[in-house]
Amino acid sequence: MANLKTFSGFPIQNLSSDPVPYAQALADNPYSGAWSSGGNLNTAREDSTGAGANAEAALMIAGYTTTRVAVVESYNGSSWTEVGDLNVAKYLVKGTGTNTAALAIGGNTPAPATTGQTETWNGSSWTEVADLNVARQNMGGTGTTTASIAFGGNPGQSALAETWNGSSWTEVGDLNTGRNAMASIGTTSTAALAVDGSYPQVNNVESWNGSSWTEIAENNTARYQVAGSGSTTEGLIFGGRIISTPPAAKSALTESWNGSAWTEVADLATARGGGGEAQNISSSTSALYFGGGTPAVNVTEEWTATPAADFTKINLGQVYYNSGSNAFKVTQQLAPAGTWSSGGDLNTARYRCGGAVNATQNAGLVFGGNGSPYGQTEEYNGTAWSEQNDLNTGRNTSYGGAGTQTACVTAGGYNPAGSPEYVTVLSETYNGTSWTEGNDLNEGRIDTATFGTSTAGVLAGGGEGPGGPNTVSSVEIYDGTSWTETTNLPTVTQEMGSLGVSTAGLVFGGSVDSNPTTKNTTVEWDGTSWTAGGTYPISVRYTTAFGSLTNGIAAGGYKYPTAYSGVCNVYNGTSWSEVAELTTARLGSSGNGTGAAGFVAGGEISTGSVASTEEWTVPEANSTITVS
Image 1 (tube, rainbow, N blue to C red):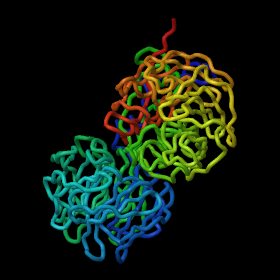
Image 2 (cartoon, rainbow, N blue to C red; image 1 turned 90 degrees about the vertical axis):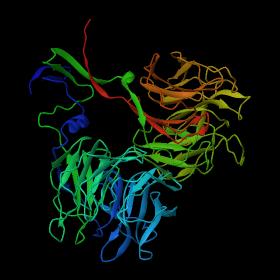
Image 3 (cartoon, rainbow, N blue to C red; image 1 turned 120 degrees about the horizontal axis):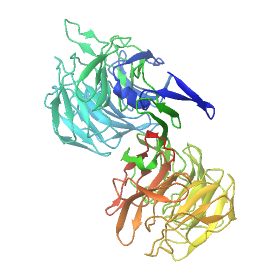
Image 4 (spheres, rainbow, N blue to C red; image 1 turned 180 degrees about the horizontal axis):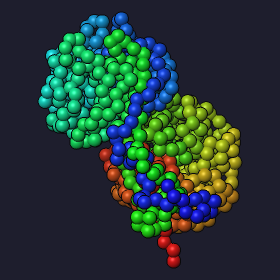
C-alpha cells in the first residue's frame, strides 16, 4: 500500500477505497476463520450445556461423566474455574443467558428421570424457580434470565415451545417438526433458530419470530447433538453426530449462516457432539465449544473469523487519500449519525435511580431507585444485567452517581424507610463488589446533579424534600474521602440532567420546587466556577445524560404537564443539537457512557416503571475533507 507525504508526524495512506470497521469486514467475509485450542475443562463431560455472551466469559453447566454431575465451571478466556454447583445433578439440560446471569432448564435427573426443573444463576449461586409446564430434556433454547424460550426435547420428540418471563413459563406456538438434540441459534426469546436434531435425525431449520415457527433453508449436513451460537441473521453450528452406519459418526463440521444460506467453513480440531457452547454470542465472528464426547473430553475450542486478505481497517482519526474518488478523507464519529438500539433488560424495573455516569456501554452500573428493593444494584456487560450486592441504605428519587462500574460514589437521596431520615446525607462508595458507607454530605438533598469520578466527584443543587418546596443551589465536591462545599449554582435547581468530569462538567434543565415551569438553561463547571452554556432546545426535567462537556448526550425527560419525552440532544461544548430519539420516551432513567457509546436504563412511562435498556452508538465514518 502506497503512502503519501508525511503530514503532522504520520504518513497519509493512498487507498483505492474507503476502509471499513473490522466487524463489517468480518460480516462481508464470514467464511474465513479457524478453530483454536482454549483452556481445558477441569471435569471432562458430555451431554452438557453452556451459557455466555462472549468467548472470554462463559459457563459449562452439568453433564455426564460416568454419572450425572452438578458441576459448573466458569471460563475467563484462557482457563476454567469451578464455581457453585447446580442444586441437582443432571445432564441433557439446556442453558441460556450469560456467565453472570443464566438459566439451566429441564434435563435428566436421577428421579424422576426427565424434569421440568429450572434453576437461575446470579453469578455466585443457583436458585430453583418455577418448573416448565411439561418436563423435558435435550431441548433447544435461547434468551436471558428474564426472557427465554425453550423448545423441542424428549420424551416423544416434542414440538412444544415455552417462554419464560422471569417468574413463570407459558406455552407458545409449537415447532413444525418435533425434535430433540438440536442446535439453538439466537440471543433473545423472540428470535431463534432450531437446527437439525432428533433420532432419527432431520435436516430441517425453523425460525421463531416471537409468535410462530417457519421452515427456512436447510443446512448442508444433517446431524444431532449439534451446538450453535449467533443470531438469526448471522450464526454458526458445529460438531454433532451424523447417522450413517451405526454407531453415529462424531462430526467436526462447522457451518455458517448469513440469514439466507448455509456455508461450510473450517472444521473443529476434535470431532464430537453433546458439548456446551457460549449460547449468547451474537454473531458468527466468534464462538466457543467445550466438552462433549463420546467418550467425554475436556477440550475447549475457540472460533475466530478473519476478514479478507485485502481488508483495510478503519481507524478513528486517520487521514487518507482515496484515489478512487480523488479526495482526502478523515475517519471520525459524528454524533448526529448515532442511533439507539435495544439492550438487555434490568432485572428490576425502576426509575429515578442512580448510575455511574462515567461508566461505559459494556461495563455499566445502576442502583437504587423507585423499585423494590430500593437498594438493589445491577451491573451491565453490554448484553445483560446481573444483580450485585445492595446499597447499605436503599434510596430513590434521582440521587445520581459519579465514577465507573468498579469505582463509584453516590450521596443523598430519599430513604423510604425514614431511618436515619427520609432526605439523607448518606454517602456510599462501590468497589465493583460491595458498597461501603463513607463521610456524609454537608446538606441532605434529593433530585441532584452528579458527575465526575469516585475520587473527584461533584454534587450540585437538588431539593430538600419530595416535591419541594426547598430547592437548593449549594454544591459539594468529593475527594475520595470527604465532601466539601464549593461555589453554588447560579440559581436554585433540582431534577436536572448532568454529565462530565470534576473540571469540565455541565448541568441543564430541571425545575424549581418541582414547579410546573421547567428550565432550559445550561451551566458549565470548570472546577471552580459556573458559566452559562448553550440553551437546551426544550424545557425539561428528569433528563438522563452521559459523555463529556464537548461530546455529551442528553436523553428523555419530562415536559409539563403530562409529556414523557424521547427527545435526545448532543452538546459540542458550545451548543445543543437534536439527534435520534429514544424508542421509548421516559423520565428518570440512568445513563452511563460516552458521547460515542452509552446507554439509558430503566425510567418511568405513563403506566409505571420500565426495565428496558437502550444503547447509543455512533459509527465510525469516512468524511471528505473540504478546504475553503
